[in-house]
Length: 449
Ligand code: PLP
Image 1 (cartoon, rainbow, N blue to C red):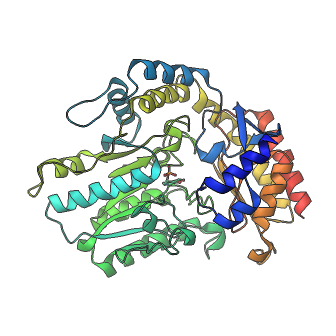
Image 2: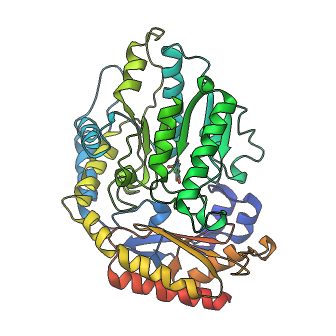
Image 3: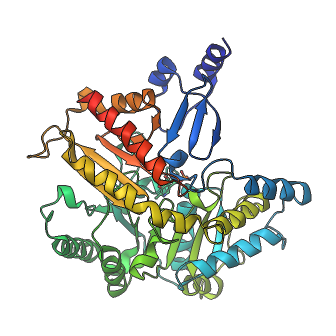
């Protein structure tokens, strides 16, 4: 009864992110009630194994009491402090310094946001300001990847290259461009990763040259394309993109909203290729989903251009009430302590082979065309024909069906619309959790087959 009335209230009043409004009203939602470790419990009492860390964010798992304690202490001591008018707070300053210590050495300054979309939006605004302040007004064009995701706010949504984020929203802008995603499985270079890297370098170079390098502000990319289907580029791709940007004289921006904070193995994916971006965005794992927070980091060159360029204005007019929120910052510090001193990052690295082995074993399944993995980020791509890689007819709505069969088997993952299943287990997963994940996934795929 309670469940029915909640469903009714939800249908009537709650707008859900990235949803079909009318279909949602027909179907309703799974109302979640509580969570512990890597398990969710819904309002009907079903226990579900979370193989997606919420929305690739609850990296430290649910029920970490030390985070609750830190947040409660901060709330009672100083629940809010503005960063405006010359004020600041202890946890915000300490978290900024911690992030500078932990990220690539090029990054020295941090602006805190509420999540990933506004981190990207802030990056774009700071880049624009930098170019204006340093007299490079013509640098207005942005390049990103097909299938890339950079949030759904006004400008970032145009860098995002997924159809639903554009339709009826009047993006991308004429100054926003996309080049091919390094999608090994569906490229002519499936068995030639170096060929794919060379093709990406050429495409970026051609695009910049066709626009004129003097007109291009920046190239944005994710180290692993997340929402576009967990596309893992070949090793060396990120470094090659950085080098290309450097030689063309355009800014190189890495969006680590998903990959940051241990998701792919190291604390930041940039580390694995010794990449030193001009700007880096992060969110999700920064507070592990316990409270909202994101960040954009920038090099001293960008900061100094904004501070001292020949055309600076009196004040850099970019800010939000909740930037550097002290409760979020305190949580961020505790989450980072759990990753490092708490051993969670080391756990993720030690269990990643179970994840890899489970995914690789699925390659033999008749529905599976490809599996991909980096650290604890992975995907299974389903195809109608393994030989030709022919995708399933979208009319079958297979992803949707698999998502609900997964739920019946007590497993939560993300079923993307093009029949790619995404996985982002918490970094606290054990070998036993992976066994449970793959048993449930196998059962789900067999049921569909
Ligand atoms: N950038 C990337 C790479 C993301 O994956 C996301 C969200 O999934 C965003 C930006 C937007 O972050 P948020 O949903 O916190 O606004």
